[in-house]
Image 1: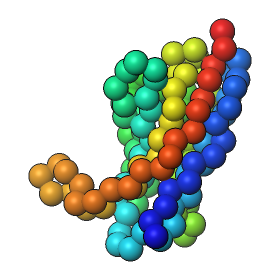
Image 2: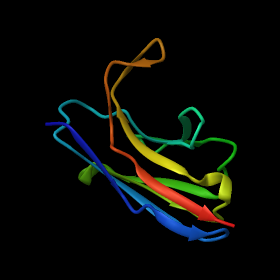
Image 3: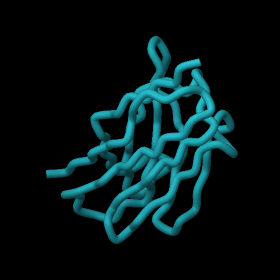
Length: 121
């Protein structure tokens, strides 16, 4: 059974750091990208960061320079190092694993259950 399990969320003061981990298991097929999204209360889910199987990364402008995504292909695990956290970073963070894309849309993807990150001012 396909499963993504996130961990590492918590409460931190502004300026602090957290590292999120997402471990994928049971996924048959090549994972093209592993991604982090987040959803703050009352807001839509938004893209945070992505890493391809080849190691190429991309970030939302709001986190660029503060967050770092990395991955271990052998373990099907992706990490999100979050430094310089701000209260606006408070959200539930979701891991996503996506397969090959056709016309920009992944043929399949899976989501984790989410992990809460709360940044106090």
